Structures are given as C-alpha cells and as structure tokens.
Image (cartoon, rainbow, N blue to C red):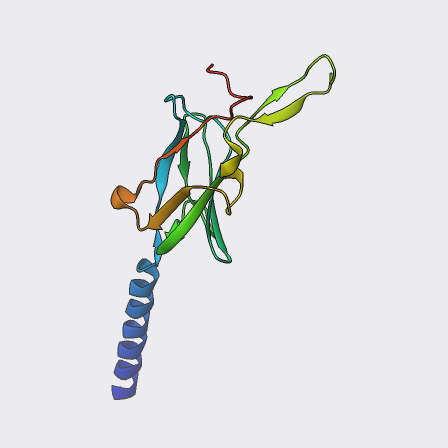
Length: 144
C-alpha cells in the first residue's frame, strides 16, 4: 500500500510540474498596427521580426493590425532585440507599355531588407504592442 501511495504522489507531482511548465512559455505575445506616415492604415503585407537565425511573422490585416507568430498561430516571440522588415505592401498596376498587371511597392524600399531597415523592436514590448509607421515609396504611393 505504501508503494502505491508513493507512486500516486510522484505521478501527481510530475503532472503538476508539467502543467506549470507548459504555462510558463518564454514567448511574448506581440500585436500592433501598421500605418503610413499620413495616418492611412497599411491594408496588406507581412511584418517580419528577425533576430539572427530566428524569425517571426505577422500578417497585416485590412485594418493595419497584425499579431506576431513564430512557430504557432499568435504564439509571440522570445525575449530579445529584433530588426523589423515589412514586405508585400503593394498595389497592382498596369500601363500603356505593359498591359500585364504587376505589383509596385507602396512603402519605401528600405523596409524590405534587414540591412537597410530602421525599424527595431525589443521583446517584451511595453503594453505588448509595437506599432509601425512607414514612409511611403516616393514614386508609387498615392493617398487613397
């Protein structure tokens, strides 16, 4: 009987420890909104957080909001410093010389590359948010 009680006690402690550890993730939820410098929301694209070999992403929604994910949906990012790039902020155009529609970038090209972006974020962020304001592309952006 004593062996049974000891096993139940050990299994109970192990289960409780596992439950507590699962609740203590090192991921920090991060949300935000992406706008242009004139206040217009960015309506599509991707925000990418890079920290060496690690990346997390957040798809920009129609209202400009995003939620960063690394390995699972809306799971956040580990603590650290990140360079931030933004891609896919485009509109589709066609012209007289090129009747085939093609995408043009609406934000400044500096945001496309981790080596040229001036966007950076520290996680965990205050209030768990990181809002991004983009300069428009000089030739391609028109206020809707």
